[in-house]
Amino acid sequence: MTEIFTEQPLADDFYDRDEWPANRGSREEFVARFGEDRASRFQRAYWATDPVADALYTGGQPVREIMPALRDALAKGEAGEDTIPTVAALVEDMNKALEGVDWDRVERGQKAALSIPVLAHNLSLGPGALVHTYAAPSIADVLVNTGELTKGAVHRLAYTTNWIYSVYLKDGLRPGNLSFLHTGMVRAMHAHVRRVQNKLGLDYSEWGAPISEFDMFRTWFDFTYIAFTYLRNLGYTLPLEQEQDVFYLWRVVGRMLGIPEDILEPETDIAASQETIDAIHSVDGEPNDSSRALVDALMSGFLTNAKGLLPFPDESINDWIYANTRIMHGDEIADFYNVPQSVMRPFLELDMPLVRQRFDLLYANPEALAAEQEQNHGIIRDALTEETSYMGQDEGIKMRDGSYNPGA
Image 1 (spheres, helix red, strand yellow):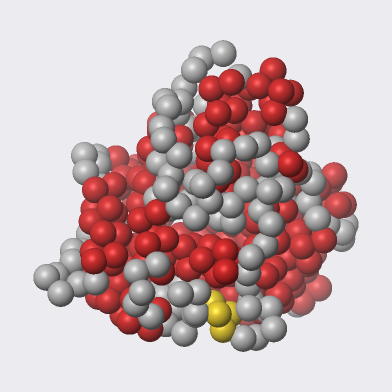
Image 2 (cartoon, rainbow, N blue to C red):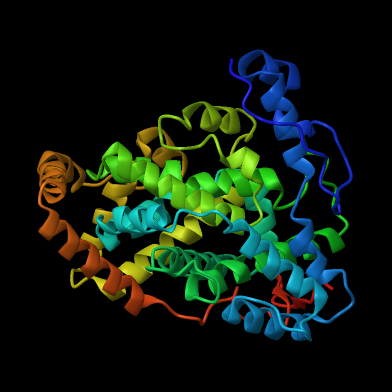
């Protein structure tokens, strides 16, 4: 096996530990299958977090002062002389992540993603990728701890989609632009939730640190390997060069979110990422009650949102979502989460060759492709909002009982 990771010191964060978490399976079996190099890198990632973002909440300033200062610095793309030092450090780190970026390739990745209909993206992210996110107990338990379950899942879907829309905006990732702002606030939200979880005094020996570097890395695949594999299942297969441009775009975003370059660098496309996905799934553990509860709430929320967008009877929309969920995940996973069978599924599958053919023809016609990309760019631009939890963390993190935990 090729040794792909380089040795790095353990991050200086809340979790100064270096052990294989109890619920991650046998380290020896992992090494036999994936190698000592990957095992060592994963082991560090289980406990590493994001010390630059975590420092926002350990410097003594209250959250209601940190958040306005952070929004202001991110919107400007740089810190000022009077900016809170920890805020300045985060903005500087995000700018450092953009050093040497191939902006032409970033734009190609955005355009490749925008060649796929926005509704298909919504399916691949909601009933698709978020179901995969919630399958990991280490992530599901943290999410259930923060926010009222059903509303939290509905809002989380909307906010995740909103942030991803910003990533696909032309020039949005440049310092001071909209996606730079949104991505910085998402990074701050991860640190804020992590700090709140730390203050609960829970035992993390089973899975590792909450919202660890490993969890972030796993979630990064939900926007790349997972989402675009599900889009393939729905009939939208990008040409390899365009797929690699999308992965490049997301590697840039991953660095902006505080994920180290060394762990992201080998992941260049779906095929190249297969072994890493297999390694991640081998240490995920089985979905638990939190996973089931989150998926139930997600499906309910997605159904509600879809009914507000699509001019069809409720029963037809329900059946359409169930059909696409089963097409994306397969019957075994859909059955585990009690996704109903769909009478529409055979008809969607019969139409799949035509969907693929139309998509291939789109890439054969540069003018039509450019028009489609511009239309989808307009749709996501018009759908963006700043009314999200990650943009307004001034009062703290909402907990399951409805209270707010300031986390600092």
